[in-house]
Length: 82
Image (cartoon, rainbow, N blue to C red; front, side, top):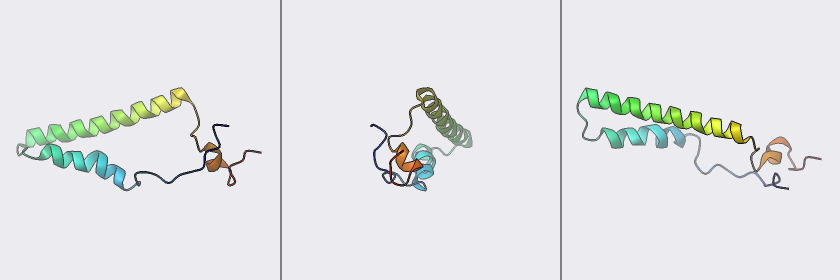
């Protein structure tokens, strides 16, 4: 059965996601931007892209509707749904 894969640790830790998605691109895009207008637009564009990425990802997950490959390991301690 395709739902019986064991649970694995996350590849990217939870605390690193905001750093990789927001802080790192902010510093890369703000290098050389000393005008407040350009910096303001860079921050708005970055936050908007993170928001849209999250919305699209959740919409695709809801549309596909498949459980995670390690679904049974999250619901049952032994990984068996019996």
